[in-house]
Image (cartoon, rainbow, N blue to C red; front, side, top):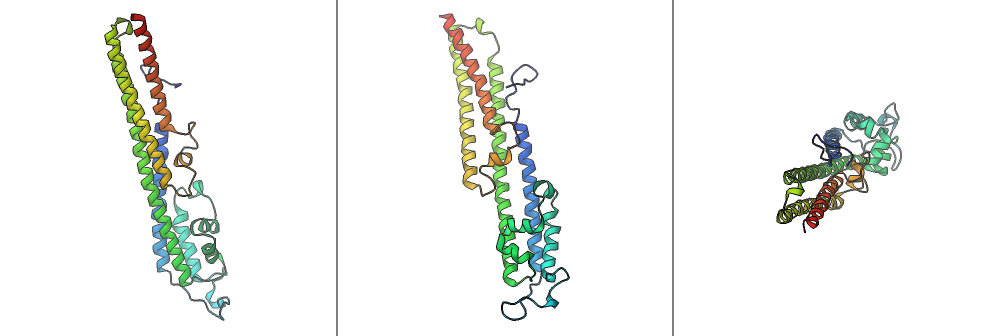
Length: 263
């Protein structure tokens, strides 16, 4: 708690705003990618596949290949992938890889070999690409839902912190030295109630983190690791709740000391 607001109360939720911005940015990127894969899937479905030609197991005929060494159908797939998936605004900043690496990451090495080799778009290969694009869309959609839950969880943690700080301010309406032992006992009970509210909020946050883990794919070891690696704290919501709880514990110590002094 190195910063304070205007009235001197320590600024306990310094990183929650940054965390919320990161979640919004990631959601926007994920939505853009889902839209791009939908457009790519639609475009691939319109590309006419070419059945293998020549002897069984042999290469396609020269007429089936374009000047790049690939069939016109594979060239069309490459073009559509670049026009959609590789054209999202954050592609270079987030990925920056080439076509071959990108399709390998999304569809697997076997499909990528078919898309980048000197062959043609066979019906099975086209079906695999469509299936892979559908899976990529589904993964993004699931992650968007997870990000929505994360956004709500951050907002709830922030609200709990704000409520705790506001309640502490309201309780600190007159000096402890002017309170009777009975007044101090009532004050202590009120402060403990504030602490209990923070503990409940922290428990809800922990459950959200656990639910993220149950729904997380291979994107990262944890959602918080993936999202908040650039923040100075690993768990911005729990950090804010813990900082607020530290304020409460300090208040309790002060109340207890004064109570003892009145005996």
